[in-house]
Figure 1 (cartoon, rainbow over the protein chains, first blue to last red):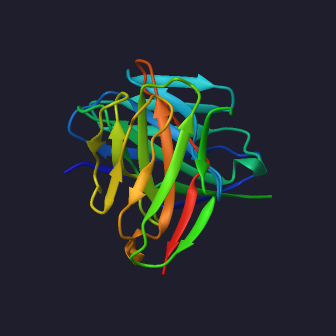
Figure 2: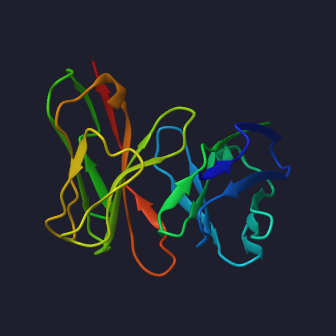
Length: 109
Length: 112
């Protein structure tokens, strides 16, 4: 079966750095996505990785290791507005997205 | 219209009733999707359409049907609603090599 695992909840302090991990087992791999979802809102795209390595975009970075079936999302200089759920999704051999349940990130002052 | 719109925003429905959730995009994306999102679970694909005139079943298609008569519209129909279909429903669209999906604002459906 196909499976995406990520922690259910994490807590971090404003101004700090947090790393959200995602491990996956899917039938094929055609890219990994990270989305942000604020409570009561739709998911919005954050990052995309298809090759191994780190992709940096401002305060957010995403890393991929295809051989380990592993990715992480790194958030720097945390702000209160970063309180949200972060969703990991893998595009499988059928080019459909398989979604993790999401990690709820709580930022404390 | 900018992006994807969904209607209604929320709905309370009696079990056994028929309901159509509407989704319209103005980005001329070929692919469109319907997901449901339940607490503690990831987004689950109900149905998808890779291009106008074609549809396919996702992970949880039972009790739902879709049509794709044109590029812009992708309605989702519940023929006879049941309480287990209480959920938040998201419509999404994508295009291009990367396949990044853009989401509508969602419909919160409660079946009693």
